Length: 301
Image (cartoon, rainbow, N blue to C red; front, top):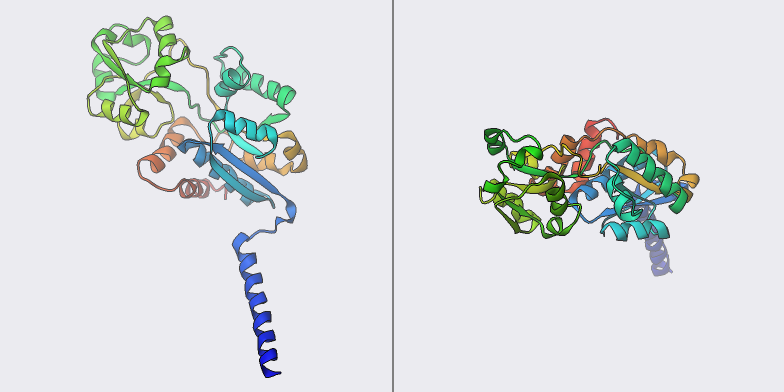
């Protein structure tokens, strides 16, 4: 009997321990429901996943599941369409030209209005308010060289391009909305153009082994390597303003998500996003830590 009583006491104690551990792992009552926030497979998107998750966790009673690095644009889009995820951040230019297969719209407000309307009509998806930054393609040079040559815009490159070398990721060289389109619109022809991995091309530019390279406007290496972002003065590239997009059925079920996610609206300009990306890509900080620190600094969590 004594042994049986002892086992009974141990069993009760173990149940209590497991119940306490189970409660502490989540830290939130999941009765309010759960949302899945995902992102594409690059640094900026991972940061955005944790920024969105942070405000949803802080401002609602919902459980948040994060799925960063899900895949490319089509993977993320199909997952949202299928209901495998509820939210991810998309870019207006990508939505317009890739998802909707529409012609380029250079006006940022018009591009946003167009994708917002078409996503509602065709996909039952809502575009919430943009974060504030425009992650479009651009051309970059070492700042000292740009100042020496007096280059501020793409058009300024025309006279000096025959003496300059450009390095680029292969995709940019092959796309009509990349180097081919720039050549056609601006008439820029470099002395030499070499295809190179994106990570290597920035170092080649920094180390003086090339003079020009394409870049995303919010890449952290622009600041770290003291590069000059040239102005696309003929508006060749479409605007790529990022915003949370959410399934309509999710939003109808949890309307509080709109206010939570819109708390990020207009808070991230190009320079801020560059700095956040640099903390991950160059300083090797975890994306979640970078996101949480920024949200706390802004008083959002």
